[in-house]
Length: 181
Image (cartoon, rainbow, N blue to C red; front, side, top):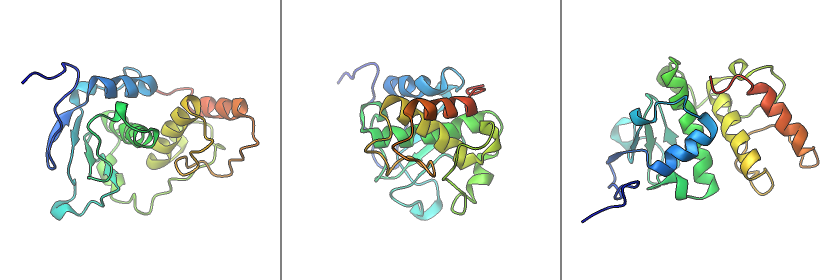
């Protein structure tokens, strides 16, 4: 049996795979070539022992992505916006890991971490690990789809739909001016 050279056959629960060409394309639209995509693995499994990772939770503690059944997709590039947004959030943790951030250690406390943010700081590094991932994936959402209809996704506090989208994009771009490095 032959498969499309840019995609992979679906993996079973507990399996592992590389990024698809579409996923690299999606991630590079935000991260450019700042991530070593060939080193990234996607697991269709729990990172935590005894399958303790919640079904709707993704984790990226060591530069590899772990998706449970509720979040896993065979190709995030071909998936709904919500799944792409989650994928890009997790890819930020790959980016952080590949730059030496102790994602696993910080991730131990992610259950108490602040994900919501305001755009009142000067640069991306002024935010926590999870806030950075939210800012980057929310920026992608804003410039590609807008926030309208996706208020269940973005984590920006105090956002008012009446705010100018151009002004909001400029605020994000100011914070992201050195990203990706």
